[in-house]
Length: 374
Image (cartoon, rainbow, N blue to C red):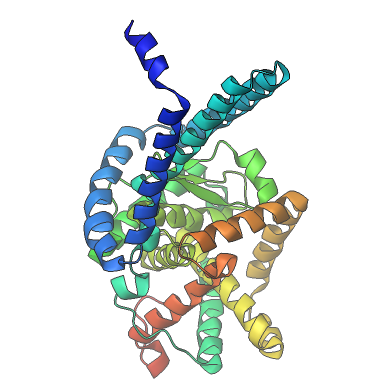
């Protein structure tokens, strides 16, 4: 009897009111995005600090990604709903088809609301430069070349210290080392604190290879997933990048910078090289766009071993490159622009601004030495 009343209440009016209410809730979320300090104080350091530990304690210890299982369930449910709608349309049961469509819209809205509630509001927090007291973000081309040269030399030095057996470390060993480094980086700044961090292999690895994805974060479960089959040099820093998202650093450039900083502060040779390697690669790309002649000269400084790693990485991803990766890049570019990152995929390159500001703060650009730069 109760069930029949519930079904009776689910009229088109009920669905439309629900859709409207969820839209208003999303608009409220986006409106709060205009007040980054409010988001930082009451969401990033408030509500999210309550949500993330619960998710990490409940799911972090599991070897399998619950988030991936969740995505599979959502995809199956979506396909099932579409099939039912098509069948209803064929049978000309348009009223039932319309109700099913409204339910689908509500499901999508709930998905989006959950995304922002569980993690997505971090996109609207103040920039990491402000949170980490890295205010001076201007730099000259000459300074860019100086730091790029330093990163190349550091990558070369660290590569020489990597033992052959380390390049064959298991994924679990790499993740555990990255977790320990993430815990240690919290001593540098309270904003870098993470509650029960963890990284897991991505169940979708065979698929995401075709999209050029090295890792991803699941907001609904708080899990950091890493592509388990990509070249070893990328795995440590990628694990740190995804765990930086767990901290609440939503923007990609900020997560990259936190991963780089984590690697530099880690005593682990493999992680430290991985961090320098990533930063060197990004800086070299930036130099190439601004001064191709300088790029050629700097490239000569890269050691044969590091060049070999660059070629191995490039060959790996080229083996999966196709039109799917182009479509996914377009989709993700627009996703980043929607979430307070107007530069889209170019946002990744803004990690350079944060790194330059940090080196300046450490005194490198004023001729002082950087503690632990090698």
